[in-house]
Image (tube, rainbow, N blue to C red; front, side, top):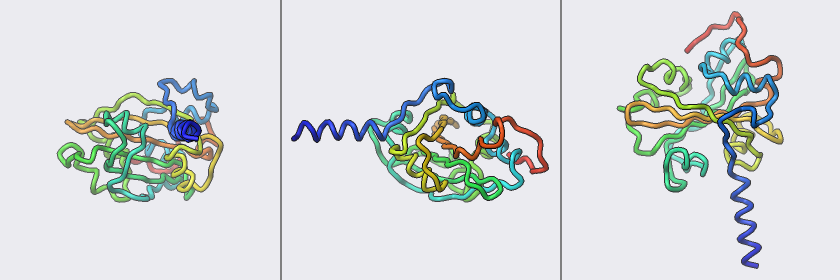
Length: 205
């Protein structure tokens, strides 16, 4: 019986983790979705270029326990509490992207002066507009519905596909490190290739 419980716990742990890869080809994502995943420009700017109205809806911000995936990338020895921010990015009122940001609990305002006061403003605007911010490489994953962030994305975006396409990236400013994970609704790539096309929408970043 103990052996079966041990195997079950190992299996459950595996279901809540994701395999992150450095090249998007490993995901076998549709071409339109690849355009969104691999574009290194501001996602805020990209959404503004595709939709008449862009909106950031903040879900929560505060101390919370990070996932095992996030702990490993942030260099934490185990899952522990971090500063967390969860938002939904909307285009023309349609929920398109669930964004999850974590940074160490001890991160201070000298490293990230704009973080605490963001409210419903875009984090990307601050990150891409600050010359002190350095950005790491993009990594990609297909998240199972059992992954903790996929479950949150399902609630936030109002759907639960069999796989979620996601990307994540580390940012550094002075001594601080910050991790942003973005999970894309299938709707974001339903009507285009992910390449920015001019519209009358304002481009803000």
